[in-house]
Image 1: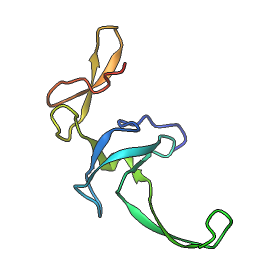
Image 2 (image 1 turned 60 degrees about the vertical axis):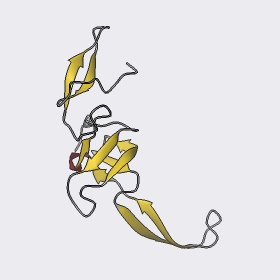
Image 3 (image 1 turned 90 degrees about the horizontal axis):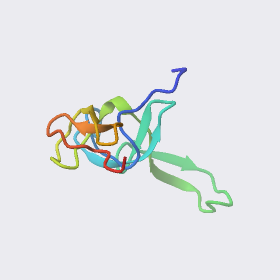
Image 4 (image 1 turned 120 degrees about the horizontal axis):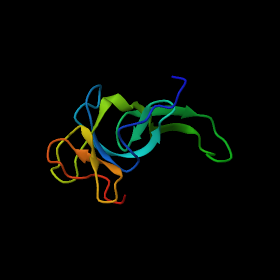
Length: 112
């Protein structure tokens, strides 16, 4: 992927995992990586990392952390109707476009 892909989700969005070992789990997006087309979701896709002792971590040992997940494997959960949904472009009062729920039509990006 040479060109940066625009993701359908942003940091702070609530999402549900569509496939894989964590299918059906919900979580908040901690980090979005648009150049790689991936997202890091809180409490999902946990991996174990074996680390040597260092100054930062003098104990060393096994660390458990969240690994990036393909953005296509997650679906946005609408904050209004609380259901997984696709998004559509909706024109708001100021003439700009914002993300809106396909199911209930509620605007998701209220801060814009």
